[in-house]
Length: 257
Image: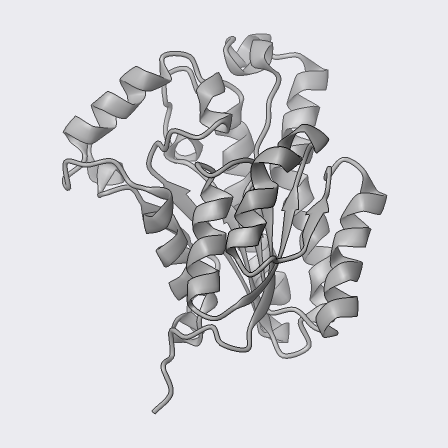
């Protein structure tokens, strides 16, 4: 009997690499170890020096600059997958951004430009990726995005990213319904706090980490490898009946009042 969690023969794109601490790298590493073939993307030219060695660790997976605000770069990323494989089995959407003044201020004081930028990069880009992936997922597939418990409840200092992540989770559910008949599953992972570059913009984040470690039922912080292994399972055939849900990877922190 074949291993239902093996990803041998599966092909996919992992977006949002920033450095060795990024959730995207944890996912890419787990998917690669399970046998998947990858194309990796990063969002800013300055990140290349940090992510090029990571791609080399993953059998020199193709590494492509993709600022999701630039539609031509997004299209080029998916064209690379089409040229390389002629199909696609999964996409990992691991990116979020909000201007510092909007992230650290009150939601009611957020600027329109800042809110729209956060929604564009953190939420709508997932829809655009799904649109480009759909024609390549001829045998079905899996689309996974990254959320956070700030989508469900107020997390101090999370600012406008809370409403943005709530929109992302809602979008995921609608996309699951729309793409389900084509065999395409759409999911969100909601990790506990992880010390990534993106998270460093949250005020008092070190205190958030300490609180999570104390309050989580497992009494430890999650790692990018924990998140990556969960992504591996959800991409695999073992999870073929799971779609439209947010899976918490947080040591049980979400169950605490």
